[in-house]
Length: 310
Image (cartoon, rainbow, N blue to C red; front, top):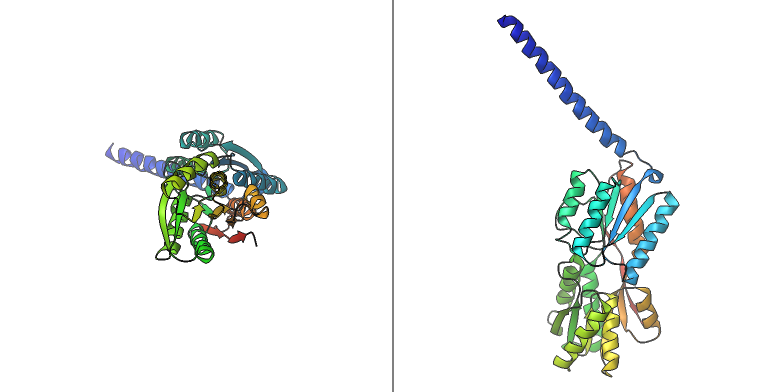
């Protein structure tokens, strides 16, 4: 009887191991199968922070255009600069069982739980223009924001001379682009520019107009403004024109169509141009490489360039 029990236990043990191995094999097969999908078979969710910014509209258009060439399906969700709405959008993508997600975070900290949820669902996530503070990102596609901030500071130094009093209009608090562009600008300005004011414009034109009006009233001596995106720069420009302060030099960040037109018309002084076309291509390429089983770089920098009236 004892011998029979031992044999039975042994058989059950073998069966359990067999089931475990079968489970592992099935899971491995699923991952292997996932790694061999063609671009035409992929459904990709794209959560964008806002479509109220022409630069991001261009980014969306470029992603859709590049995906169309490869036959991939793109589902776009506009978070309208609301981190809670973006979280809901991410949940929807996970429920739809998309093959991958591209996210342009409203807030780098707030997006982390959604990235972790996608990780749990085995859905790769690519972050574009802004990073996530948590979860595992397949690849971060971003401009060198720190370098761009330094370039903005150098432009104001070259244009206004050292020790000029300037202001900075910051982006959305918590966004990585806000932190990095601010870091670069302060680094480039240290000991060479006097930053007398720094306020949040939330990457929004209307809010930045009001913020600039307040800055001008409190600091009439300023000679330059660095706005952390072009929408803020154009809002600042409206306030400067209304105050008849054509002596103030304004530089933005993005290279958005409205800003380039304003520069061409000799109104906005300059911008740090991002290559959103390149960022769109790199975002999709990272996903395609993943599904071909190829190595994907964790961080890819797209180029930035100074664009002036000259």
